[in-house]
Image (cartoon, rainbow, N blue to C red):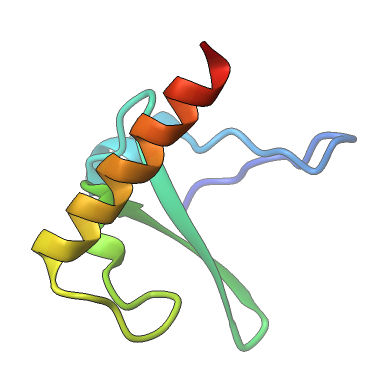
Length: 79
């Protein structure tokens, strides 16, 4: 078991041993869930592993196409 301290901003640093055990590396994204009275932190390897996380998802090919179009339209607006 590892212990982490919560900062005044509500942040914690995940102990190195815990990160290594589950394969979390600097820059990785994680899912934070509340289960009963516990906070669970889970690594996610790829954005598209979240498929269905917010509800029914489109097929992966359609999701990727929509994401690419959205990103392209944002870069055009900024230019």
